[in-house]
Amino acid sequence: TGAFTYDPGFTSTASCESSITYIDGDEGTLLYRGYPIEQLAEHGDFLETCYLLLYGELPTPTQKADFDYRVTRHTMVHDQMNRFFLGFRRDAHPMAIMVAVTGALSAFYHDSTDISDPKQRMIASMRMIAKMPTIAAMAYKYSVGQPFIYPKNDLDYAANFLRMCFAVPCEDYKVNPILARALERIFILHADHEQNASTSTVRLAGSSGANPFACISAGIACLWGPAHGGANEAALKMLEEIGTPDRVAEYVAKAKDKNDPFRLMGFGHRVYKNYDPRARIMQKTTHEVLNELGVKDDPLLEVAMELEQIALRDEYFIEKKLYPNIDFYSGITLKAMGFPTTMFTVLFALARTVGWIAQWKEMVEDPSQRIGRPRQLYIGADKREYVPIAQRG
Ligand code: CMC
Image (tube, rainbow, N blue to C red; front, side, top):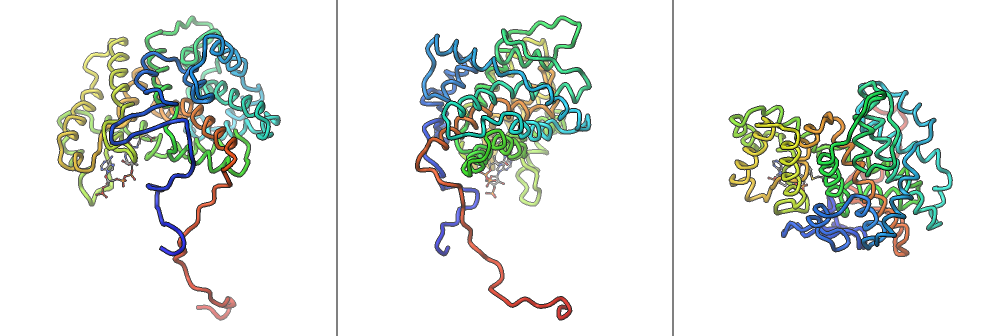
């Protein structure tokens, strides 16, 4: 392998030291700063999780109140940002809008360019966490042709987001607390996941000293792909395509066929070789949301449960240690809440922003970090002489 170790997909290369998130893929364990995801999702709130990821400790009541206040001071976006949305076709994918508008934040907050200043780094972090729901809701409102709804800062993070998405002017909108809590749990589950593709993208972009908003925009672009965050959208489309439980076996057979590129979306994970702990919590949340909304015998849920049953018993999936991942159930829940499929990955991006920012901050503050610059194994032509075009052919 020459002078370098060849590790396609970085399956065995650690790119950094980190004290933020720990995963034991064989055990199916996920810890944020040492705290099990199950406990945070059950008892914690999202901004508390943000504080934990950014600062390393759970906040005291005073620290929490101060943090909530500081985040909510930044929820508005500059009024000129509206024009970025208006430049898109109404049928643009909201992830395309997210990539562009988040990147555009870098043109509004010039003070955040000074990443050598810890105070500015924290302000940039607050801005990102605070503005992401506003931008995501604006992308949604634009796609359905409704006026933008501004943030209401006395609401919780998830409740505020639901309101910005689903309230319409001149009509009362009351946030359903069960749905808000379920959404908050979804945000907590997605908040960080150590060095996944989009986080590594943010770190790599940030390693050159680039503007933090531009780095997050790079992370959003990476998340969009169906092998990563785009899997929640792809999983729901797959469940819809399967349609009824009796067709599940046919799709499982397709997924096993070596000559067919089809994969079961929402199954498998690079690190988890056991049940994804987030998927377990997600499955419970799905049932809670469907119950609350009075959805009985949801055909998509029936297909999902049948698929899970068949796949978990199948030799192929057992041997390759393929289990449902977080994206398997999240789509059903988000759809029931009223989000269109194109918004699913946007919600993932919204929640993962804090993880990206925490990892970016950790990298910038780590004196051992250098610009990310992988090497390659060159397999192209040997050195040769240039041939003038007239002599070629
Ligand atoms: N359906 C059928 N076969 C699969 C699947 C699947 N979903 N996932 C992996 N395999 C097979 C794959 O064909 C390969 O078989 P073989 O060894 O015979 O070539 C083997 O399992 C290993 O797969 P891999 O692609 O080498 O594994 P990876 O670690 O590179 O990829 C993955 C992990 C998540 C990209 C992959 O499992 C996948 O494409 N899953 C579907 C998409 C998905 O649900 N992604 C969401 C991941 S969780 C949320 C997030 O990270 O954003």
